[in-house]
Length: 236
Image 1 (tube, one colour):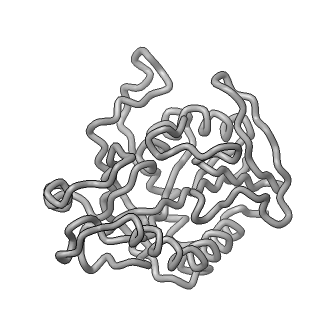
Image 2: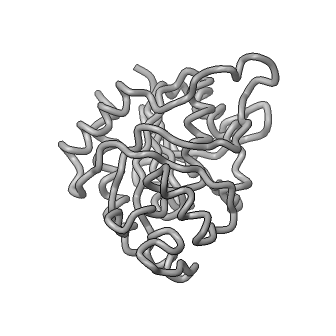
């Protein structure tokens, strides 16, 4: 069995090394990537450790190439999202089973290599859901559609009304990672944590301050759950 990669953002994986982990730098064709490693577990901060990259500026090819170089054979990512329905309130955890990312032309291959059917790995996703039920405290919704927005701006209320007819949560990173992981042959699953209701949902206008407050409210629970499930899935 290869290594398990955990991918997170600054709300979950900060810039300081986690307890028991050692920093490592991985060379890739497009530049080095810094990670934290402990035995069979690799932590990747998708926004970078040296300087912050916005969601729109993340080099997903480089990040995922580093995980492949380290021998990772499965990936669990956690992503901050907006809820597209009022019942998906702040603090909701959801494991999506599909995504919409119509604007993405992302691939590792300029030829025909990118002509494949993308998606979350069903067997690995089931394993994540089962491990979450055993080890994590917050309830996890099994299934849902993730809409990937372009960013870095948030969406207008009219855009959210359109998107909400087809998806459950909205974010800016998960689909990109899933597509590249699939091309590399690495099973990928994600857990989304709702940090805000999307703009206009339940008649509420989104603010940056409200978004940051939502992240602060969910950070501790999300971090603890991510750590517990990662330990369960890492294996012997």
